[in-house]
Image (cartoon, rainbow, N blue to C red; front, side, top):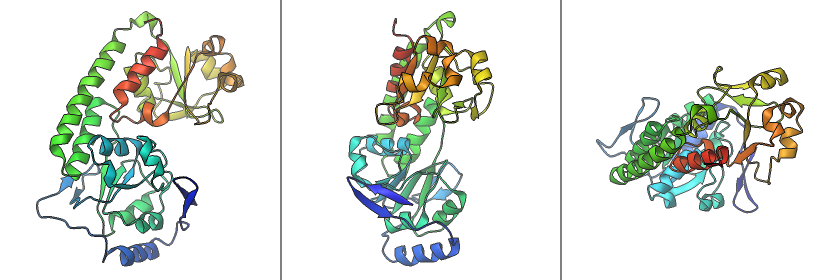
Length: 313
């Protein structure tokens, strides 16, 4: 597997496997030179309940678009040495080494970057790779996945504490909470009879729709929409019969970065062609990290989605 690095450069990762050997290799490479200094009393408790001493945190590997954005919001973006595939904001991060999808991490690839702190979204993986990472000479802090303003506040507080930027963290949190509440209040004024049914799909191939407990479900609700898939947990396939029964008014999707998906592509799908959304060509496409990242920009995403759902005001 290979990870992209900036414009045309590449880092070739080794294939996963032989966990014990990988651990020995990584430890031998990093132990004498990682520069990690755990100072007494300077520790935090992460999303998994682990007590971690973050150390100097001058070479940060950020895994998760929300994690990367929060580090930048705290004014510590220059400390980031690499990011995951989903981290694309601010634009400056696209020039940094990219370690690929955060749920398919390669221990050798990460170890070779020699970070002195990994800030990882709670859903990073695979589990066997994480077990090795927890044992290495550098600290790893897991950041909670929580689709609420209080959840974003907890993310900011934990990352700020990890970087020794608690005061700045409180300022960023206060600004975020104020903006989030204002956006949510705006959408809350939409009367029940005007609320539109919105179904979110990751892609058209399997039509896996977002149910309850997903970040897409949360953003739909905060923006004043209704999610007819909320009777199921997580992502579930939606059949043609189910879609006709749910009768979504709007289809919501993530941008593919190439100008799509287009209305022709979406409503050319047989299962979606018979929906009210198809009759009105009602398709909303937003950047994935912006829409469902639940980070510092989420208040803006709520406003944008609410305006797209209710352009008449």
